[in-house]
View 1 (tube, one colour):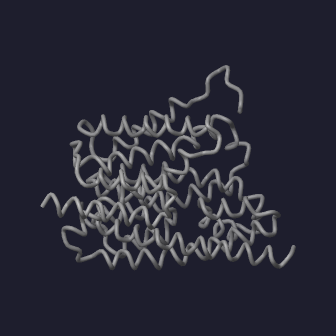
View 2 (cartoon, chains in turn cyan, red; view 1 turned 45 degrees about the horizontal axis):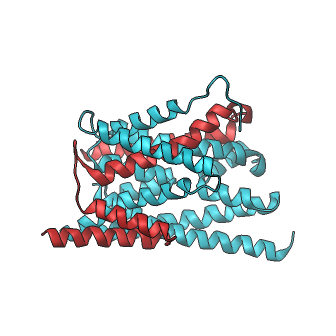
View 3 (spheres, chains in turn cyan, yellow; view 1 turned 180 degrees about the vertical axis):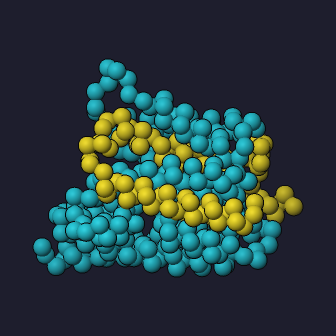
Length: 232
Length: 105
């Protein structure tokens, strides 16, 4: 393994940690806007440590949804990390149950992407741990900054915050709609439109947050395997 | 919602999300690496994120509402199409929402 490859991996990890940190400010501020206190925002960033699930939880709570609806949304997005874990387990090959439990906490979008993109296994491990450490630090520190900075905001700033949360979800969704294969991008767009339309249509009729879960289940079932289908 | 309920949601969802991560590191790969599971897992984030965009951007309680948030989303979409970085996208969306609020008085 060459040293330039090592330092490139570390540099990328730190860059990603800083970028994700900015996102942490948005999360902390949005959590405050959704009615959570700074301790609750910090607990989420430290314990849940999965941005999309955290935004989903506070999004549903902020919209007046029940705790079960909020938890359900967070878990639905968290299933992604289960699949990442399956890919990461052989690469990380934790030697003990404790090592496995520790590594699992950092299995998220960014660490998996960095580890899988690394040219060999040793660099993959380095990428996982370096990205995990920098993102964990940046995300938690910036969540605190956002949560403290957002308290005591006026009405106009609150209106700004109300616009930040849907825009943040759109930014998370965007790369999925732009996949390189046009079939895949098309499928993702149909899924996204289906989810949005069902959620809006159900909004007047079901408790807040429930429409989101129903929309996801409906769309996921629409994507169930057909008997004649072969794996692509 | 009471502070206790909020804490319950925070802690239960956090533990659940952690257990989902741990499950991935622990189950045999063959359980998860089936085409239909891969397909559903690939679809869920897009459906969920789009549903959240719609609900967060266009509803208030049980009604569909058009306000500055929709303008913010439009600006965010434009910025994303122009490949603006995340922080720029949300700053522009926030500024748009605030601007509409000021103009609408």
